[in-house]
Amino acid sequence: MRFILDMVHHNPGEPPFATKFGDPAHLRDYGFNGQVFKHINCVATYEATGVDCFPAGTPERAWLEAFTPQIEQEILRAKTHGLQVYYHLDLFVLPRRLLEYFRSEICDPQTGRILLERPRTLELHTVLFDELARRFPLVDGYIIRVGETYLFDTPHHAGNSPIPRIGPAWTPDYLYEETLAGREPADARWTQQQADAYVVLLRFLRQEICVRHGKQLFFRTWDIFPDKLHARVDHYLQVTNAVEPHPKLAFSIKHTALDFWRRVKVNDCLRQGRHPQIVEVQCQREYEGKGAYPNYVMAGVINGFAENAIKTGLKDLLGHPGILGVFAWSRGGGWYGPYIKHELWPDLNAYVLAQFVNNSSRTEAVIFQQYAEERLGLRARSVRDFRELCLLSARGILLGRHCAAFDQALGESVLPTACWMRDDRLGGRQQLAPVLDYLANHRADAAALAEKAEAVRLWEQIETLAKRIIWPNVQTGEAVKISATYGRVLFSIVHQGWRALIAGERGHRQEFNDAASRYAAGWQEFRALAESTWCASLYEGTYFNLPGTPDVPGMDASLEYYRVVFGEPQHPLK
Picture (cartoon, helix red, strand yellow):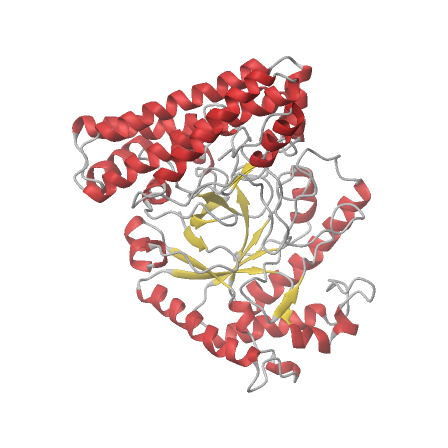
């Protein structure tokens, strides 16, 4: 494979992760040949415009002088170890002083948004790519995304997506999820407007990055809905067929048709069109605990996940001449925690991925065994137990996090299980409302709860295996055992939370009281586990909210709601 790239996506606005995947020597050892960083566009001064974006003595200049050496050093370190260097850019993002100076020439006068079609917008981005090419000649290219603009680490910049939303309503650029319960297919008028904008932008980027500067461009078809560029084949071809191919232009596409969720088919846009592609894979799955508990996904990513009717995986994709490689996220994705103290689970996923892409004649199972023996020092039965533990983790997560009846019936018209559980947050009755309604209407409560109980049983088995394995490295062994217990306790809490929600919705007071009591006991065990050296940070009983926005009620508030409904005495649930 020509490209085996890795990026650590540090949480926006938070301190960087402590991770060996920032070390180019580690990436090279595992088989990666390229390292991806962020924010190089934010150290561009736009001096050629005559605007002083970072005046001496200002906070902007202090930030620039502190941030620029970090960019220079990471490029040098990666190149010293023989890695290609790419930078992930969100468009449009400009210095605030530059934006204010050219506001009348680049912005919508009503909304203040930077517009693709305004006269100076692309001219300023020509200045950007000229300056980056001159100042950072060792950079091999860029991975460009539109749709979200994260400004948490760049306080002196502002921006928004260049592509109009589908539909008349505008939403914040860092919150692309219009709804958690489903949405109508895009109106053809808005789809055409998006397609036209994509073509204008892509032709510009092709000319400036590939033709004028000879740099590689990967354009991410990023979004999470099946009626947009990312996974709707006719829309993808409508856009990409209007752009002339170039040897240094390729598209970066997630291997899943939605986000990195289970019960989602492989992306139909892969292997389509006249442009080459790289495949995006997440190693520290943001919707599945981020390595706080065992989560081995490469068997499914490579061979096809067992729950999917068509089991397509990387083994099927990599043989296509239009697939040039992979873009892996070894660490990061999403927001907040859990924050892990041991990298085993993302490390295992990243190793197997990179080794397979380097040599896909070797099976995933053979590479897994190599990791277990050479990297962990396991032998004989312990290797087999570790393999069983890892495969069970994929099954345990599927049953614990998802709801088969809901997901299989509604398919990709909705987010899997309404995306009720993300990052380190547990949603409740509001997030799970469409699921609870479906279960009631189809008399599927018992099946859903049996699924959650089976998940707990699998996690108990995982916990037993973790303790039975003979670990040459004591610290690794302790970390695995703690993570296995973490999974068992978490999914016990999930099971009892679902029991309480269903009992509350159906008016079953005794069942609710029993589930609520067990839910509280689970949190007590969870908090006690947090005292262990290798335990990751814990989940929370609130739902996801963006930084700086109000808390969103989740599972805890839902159980309190039903307690009031039933007139039960007040008592702490956790």
